Image (spheres, rainbow, N blue to C red):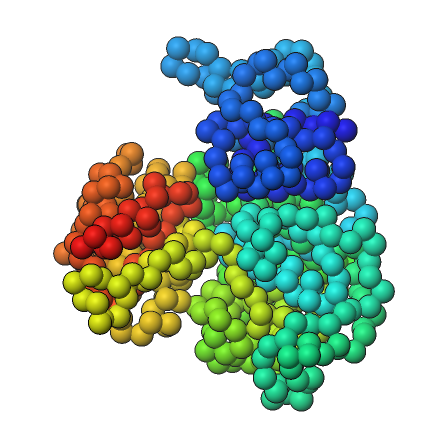
Length: 503
C-alpha cells in the first residue's frame, strides 16, 4: 500500500516509516522543519519528505494516512488550524490511523513482541535486549527510539520466521568464573538451544505517551507483548498526566495485554510498579534489581556478577557505567531468558554492546591551546532531561572519572520540565557536579530561583550562545562537560568546542 505519514521525522514515526519501506510499501511523509538525523535516514531509504502539513498533500491519494502524535486539532490565535492537512482528511472522510495501530496490524501480528517500558532507560534497554537476541542468532526485528550503535539504524523487520537454533556470539571477554564457555577471537559457537519464542521476535521501545489526537491511550497498549519489561516508573509527562496514579493505570493497561503464557519483568526496587501489579496480573512475573529479586547484581556497574535465584550465573564486563545501566542490563538479561537465551550468553553479548547514539556519546576531546601538555577537556552528549535521569547520568560519569571536575550543561526542554513541575528537584539531580549551566530561555518559571540552593555552582543563561560562553570561560584541563537535553540543544556542544579551541 501507499502510506503517507504525518509527523514522519520523530524517532518512532521515522522508524515506522523505515519498517514500512522494508516491507515493500510505498512511503511518503511530512513534518514541520524536516530535520536530521531522521530526515537523512529516510531520504537514504528513498522516502519522499514534504515540509509542512498543507492540504495540497491530499493530491498524493495514499491508501492510508498514518498520524503521529505531534499532530493535533489545535488552532492559531487567529483561528486557523495548525495542521490543515488533518482537517482536510477529516472533512473528506479519508482513511487514517495512528502509528502504533498501523504497526500492530501490519508488522507485529504473529510475532513474539518483547516490549520495554519505563520512565527511564527504555531506549538503552531496548537496544541491549535487541543486541543480545542478535548475538544469539534470533535475528530480531526492532524499533528503538534512537540509533543503537551496534546496528546503525533505528528499526528493521528482522527474520520473518523463528530461527531453529541460536548461532554464535561475537568475540570479546575473558574466561568466565562461573564455569561457562570462554570467549575468544574465534567467536565460539555456543551450544544450540531450542528457542522458546512464540514466533519471530520483535523488540520495541514501549512508550507511555499518548497515541494520537484521537486515541489518548498510551502507545504501548497497541503492541500486545508476550514479554514485557517494566523498567521503572515515576511521574513524567505532566502535559498529559495529572499524577503518578494516572500513569500507573496506563501501565496496568499494558499488563492486561500480556497473555498468561507471557512474562512480565518488573524492577523490584520500584514501589510504583508494585502498585501496578497489585491492580492485577495474569502472567508469569519475574523481578530484577533488588537483593531478593529473581535477577540481581553483585559488583560495580562496569563489572558485575548476575545472580539468578541467588546463584551466580553470569558476569557482565563491558564499557558502560552507572547503576542505571546495571539495572537496564538485568532487565534485558531477564527478558532474553524468557525466549531461551541463557544469562551467560546474554552477558557475553553485552560485552560488545556499544550503547545508543546520544547516550554518554563523546562529542569532542579538546586540548586547550593555553595548556598543550595538560589533560584534554571531554564533551559528552546525553539525552537525559528528567531530574532522575540527570542524577543517574551524572552519577554514572562520576563513578567513571572519580574526582575530576564535571560541568553539567542542560536545558529544561521536555513538556514536563517547561511546565516547571519538577524544577524543585533540579538541585538534587545535580548534587554530584562541580558546576551547572542551565539554558533558561523560553521557560515560564525562573531557573535561577530554582537553582539558587546550589549557590555559585549554578549559572543560568538566556541564550545558547551565552550558555556556551559561560561554560568555555569556566573550563579547565581535564574537565568533563556533560551536555543534557532531549533535543538538539542548539548545537551547544559544537559551540563550546569551538570556543575552547580558540581559547
